[in-house]
Image (cartoon, rainbow, N blue to C red):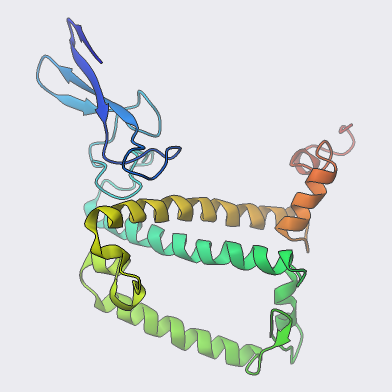
Length: 244
């Protein structure tokens, strides 16, 4: 639909990046509005907030770019590339952490807080799914983690192609998902969306643990469902003296 006015022309069309609430398929695209003034200047509307102008430095070409940058963190191209790389890595860590927290608790093997308690005990022994780890002493685990992470970080910093830093392919793509360029772009967007959700979930786990020390997210959820009126965020931020 297009509307003409004395000040210019406003039209709506489909953008190349799906919205956060739409499916990640190519058909699930959200309309954006572009305003063309009498001077010929075109202004795109940000997808995260209809009617808000899209920042000039965010053109929608990056996976998950919905025109949201209120602090202007991506105005410097070098910083923007570094932030994109950092976001992808944190997304992947969060997507590993969230199921790693939920699955053991769902299986009755303790929550993620209890899983760390052995490290505070002198001579403590690490376990995995209830089974002792042969090399499970704290110094040994720290040494293994240090060497493994140092090697991975060295390999990453040696790569000069920013795209390969984020999406190395090869052994990291055994099923060949990146061979189809169109499908690959779709999967990049799905990864960012799910990764952002996982990062929010992990922050929620940390907040819940701070509010109710020693408890896991599933235990918190069960407690809330048992008594939603009292077991909620209000139980933390509202003084008990004035709560019903």
